Image (tube, rainbow, N blue to C red):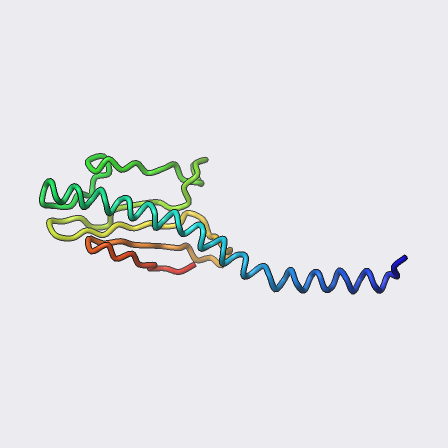
Length: 126
């Protein structure tokens, strides 16, 4: 038989360990979700590169590139990032992936960008 004090100490220790583990787990979850943005932007880069090799210019039209934006989580879909082409010209392009969810609840939405040089950058960290 355990006393009430022993049970309360065990619950307190469990609570402290949980409080220490949650931030680490949230960082890992956020990093895993960011993989979606990176993958989608890499795919879009490949499509833009193929378009550039064929037409000597980049495109801002998803249909022309044959890129399909998945339904967003906010639209009963599964995508956590909205993909958009910010700039497309004869020699440059920039594409952006903007999070539609706040992964860690801090009010900041994650944003990634990729350009014609395949430079993948986290513009706004979450």
